[in-house]
Image (tube, rainbow, N blue to C red):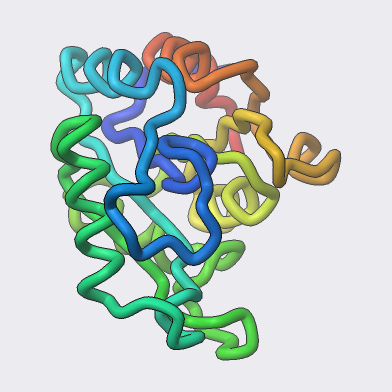
Amino acid sequence: MSTSRPEAVLFDRDDTLIGNVAYNGDPALVVSVPGAREALDAVRAAGLRTGVVTNQSAIGRGYITEADMRAVNDRVEELLGPFDTWQFCPHTPQDDCACRKPRPGMVLAAAAALGVAASACVLIGDTEGDMSAARAAGAHAILVPGPATTQQAARAASAVCADLGEAVRLALRGSANEAP
C-alpha cells in the first residue's frame, strides 16, 4: 500500500456531503451531513484541491433545470466552503453517456480541471457507481456507507470508512492510495 498523499479529493454530493433529497432543485432543502464542514476544512488546510462529481439525472428527466441544480450547489458551498471544480452529469441512465457514474468521465474531467492525474485523486462516495467510476479512471475510492450503499459497493472500494471525517483522515494519511 502506498503512503503518498493524494493531490485532490473528489466527493460525491448526495448522501456524501449533503443529505439526499430526491431530484432536489430547492436550496432550502440542503442539509450537510454531520462533520462535512470539518472534513472539508481539513482537506483544504492540507493544501489539497477539492471537487464534486455528481449524477444529476433530474435535469435530463425535466424535473429541475441546470439553474436549479446550480442554486443547490451554491447552497452546498455556502455551508461547506468552495470547491475547486464541480462536475455533473445531467443525463439519465438511458442516455448511455460517458460522464454518468459508474463511467469515469466526471472523475477524468475533474482531474483535468484540477491539473492533476486521476491516479492522484481520491473519490469519496456512497455507492458502487462512485467506487466504479473512480477505479475506471485510475483514481482511488473510499466508501462511506449510506442508505444507497450495497455490499457490491463495499467490494469495489479501496477502503470503507464509517463517516466522512474518517474517510478524509484516511485520504490525508495516504492510506487509501493502494493500487485501484
